[in-house]
Image (cartoon, rainbow, N blue to C red; front, side):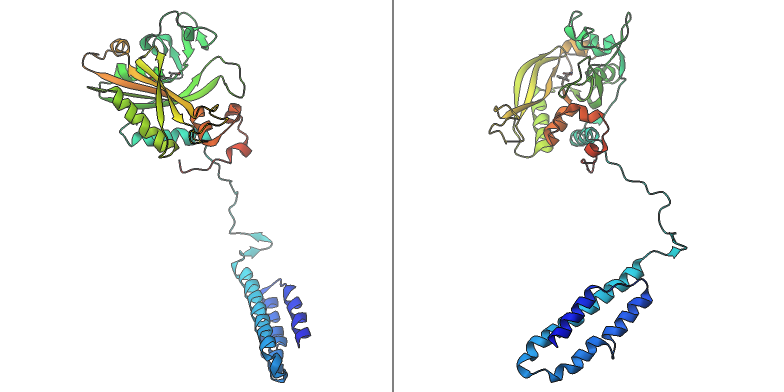
Length: 339
Ligand code: DAH
């Protein structure tokens, strides 16, 4: 009996069928009243009492196995699509693989989402600009090195037409066309005349923030940035502000966050300092407000600017900046997100 059971078990393993009728034939052969497995059950009464328990178990397992296999085969035919002359009429005519969002778009959208929760709206400005919007209105001295050909791509000289080197230029547009209170986020692409390498590119992306109202203080700036850092990099993230210089803000600062790789203990990524720099910020210089027609005795404001590539690198540890602009789907497909 035991031998017969194991023979049938092997036979069940090799069950195949190319139609529902063939599945039914298998059922009849093994499980119907006169089927081979049913026959074994009928013989069961002849099994010596001391073996009944063991053989009984084996028999039950065999019957279940056959039934499962037959059910599975049956189901595979029921689920199969309608076949007409070898073609499947229910299939999409032209299957289109779903793409994924670009990692820089994911991070940009996340930044916008975080700041929109504290009242920021989005504003955009042109990439091809004049000197005044990029430098003049923002308090850059005439001889400031950023205006140099080595840093800036010029489209035309005298009067200067250039590719914006930072999204702070959108501030100039907003402040000359809107009245405070102003609370905007300006995402966009910027251009600098840099040699392309794994850590620099001639174009990259920034998000600028600007808030102007009565009584805006440095404490407001710090609070907004702390909120941002925690939302972006996690609740335990800490920030520190280091004094710095930008022509358009006074005082100015650069903000570091506690290294999100080692949690601030020190690692190769943060050069063992526990901190990584993520943005520049400060109180809008009164000269900038005045240049744009906003009364600096009534209004104050803060501004900040961050590199989207930088934030993306921190979140996803992308080692080579060039990957962002090479459109290699193997790289891009790794980023899936709700944003
Ligand atoms: N525009 C600066 C840059 O490209 C970034 C920046 C720094 C923007 C300080 C700001 C700011 O608004 O307040 O490096």
